[in-house]
Length: 67
Image (tube, rainbow, N blue to C red; front, top):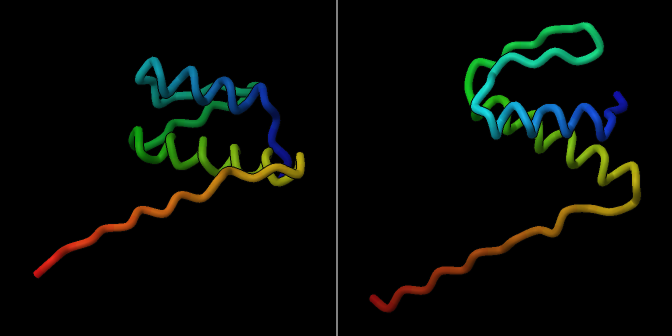
């Protein structure tokens, strides 16, 4: 499935506004929660980055404990 930057921008605007209902190309989608919407944003970001040859950097968090 291909995604557009316009679609991604619309999702980000909706997330910033706290809106869960999105209308894109005449179709309405309502997300169950902000977490669902944010997950969709991340999926589309990764797809766009993958198709353009760039990827998001991975993060590694290390923790240390003495005893």
